[in-house]
Length: 403
Image 1: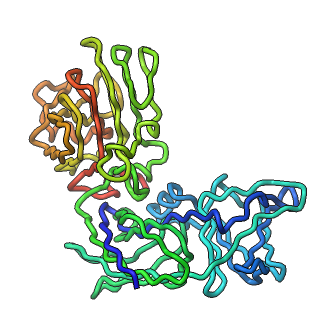
Image 2: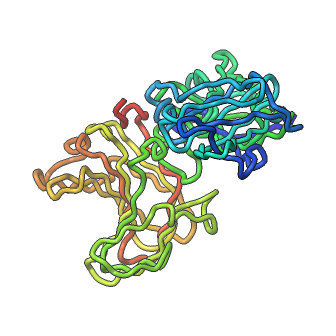
Image 3: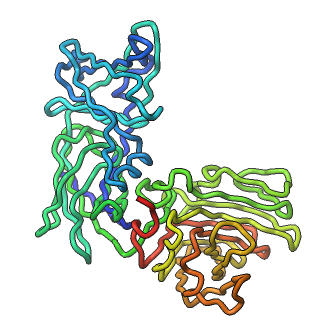
């Protein structure tokens, strides 16, 4: 038995596993038998058809998390393979272009993430190869009550957690790479890193659950606030008075947006990937913003007592909470002095400078119910900004999201 230690953090606790399945889907065989029907053929390791295999079509990772958080079923459709190993899927049953496939038959199976059915008139089919499954088990340590269950991101695999011991167990999980999540309820979950399962493996993982707040992002694990907000992820914008030399050189414009994923790098990162922007301020009109809408509830920030994040770089960083971009909206500003080495910064509510056009003497208590955005603004005295592992403490996901 292989043992694996993993750390869980966040306001939901789940088990996540993202499987790379290049060996389980036969390249060049995608297709369907009719315009309105897709087809897959399920085979074993000897390429023999598997009859009676269960094929479940499931929402891809971010949609899956959205559905689970809303107590909705992430399963779109379930079909069974016939004697020839073929299963047919009505095209109109596929709500999304990319889906995950979970396929099982007894002790063999396959998990195929980001799967795309391709219509074809040549009677070609997607071929799924089933392999011997693995066992994943372990226990969860937490200062709070145990989570109710653990799940595998993007799948329908779920295991109850023993409320007296914190133990859980999955049997017959397809081989592959997974992220682990444990769930307390639909709006309290935390990512736990990754685990690789080989055919016939027996892996024991110990999870440390942290339900003290909302895990905003670490730019690696999918189980966080930003992955839930599919249309509300980070944006990076700068004005014409700054030259951005990384992630890419851009011409000066009054407003230039940098694709968020272009700024994610592994070299120099704290762990996995971190967000990185290198820049040169050219005038007092300089601005550079890394921000995101962090709440769909108008009063979502009401109970936030602490923000923590890791950063490095140069110059003074402004941490900014605000409402929708409008001149009459209040802002709460705090400041951090960046260093060339990674440091964890903590911002508490008594550290804010409050700017409210309608009330110059406003305090945090006066404006906190009007905040929905979180932004990081590097200063004109710096040239480099790195960001990672952002937390909002004192709240749960249910405070930020509209069910």
